[in-house]
Image 1: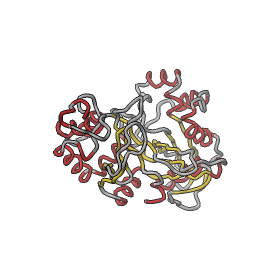
Image 2: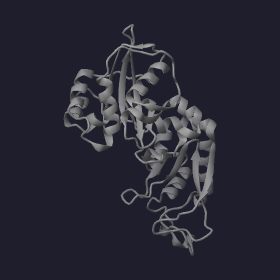
Image 3: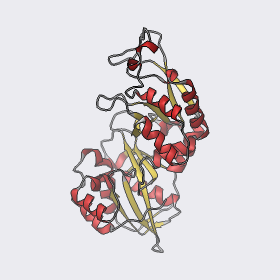
Image 4: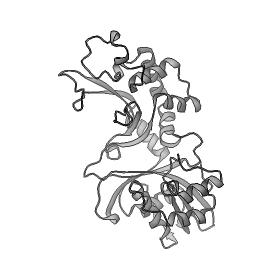
Length: 325
């Protein structure tokens, strides 16, 4: 869905005073700053839609979007880093006055390109970054069992109460944990704080596996684009810094339209489970104990397990997926 920027000039003024203030926004802030300082027009000699590229991420992203939109000459472009605006008091006020909230926005960047006919194209971009030597899992969506179920239901994908309860078992919601019903789990040797995928209600588990198999593309789109209710800035592209880089102009990034990414994810793999054992933490698995980890395409699904949010539901992008699809 194309975006309609509101008071773009004012947003850029706010952004100029906030860029770089939050460490978590450095990657998209740097992209926005570079795009806004570019010298235009930019001529595209060829439509290069390769996905894994090395160079200045800002220019690579601009060129990729332009090629995807069949723009041969970028007459001008502006970029807004939504993270910077959302963490700025003035930004929050400006957005509130105009009836748009960035506090729960899936797009990290909003970019407007103009072609030689003065036609404007405004798109949302989701950004991911890895600053390790080797690529790691990237978090895609963080929610609760009920939150994810509501997301599906509100977008026309029915989910039964049995399936919701099964997912609450998987996440370890209070009242759905083995430790809440020790009689049902006598002599338990593994983590009592949650049920593993192979342990959840079999009817609910079968429903989820059927949904992930039949509705893989629809669910993937929701996780990439519509993770928040009434999100005004739905991402149409994704840029992923693949690993640590010393030189900004020699940074490796992976760039996709969301449509391409969902298509490639489905071709990579359908719903499946993979065996694993818990080898760290307070509840290490005894020798020979295996659990099932659900996944579909390049998306992996797991219980959050963090100390602050132990019973959250987490969706990650498979480490190094851009080399595999």
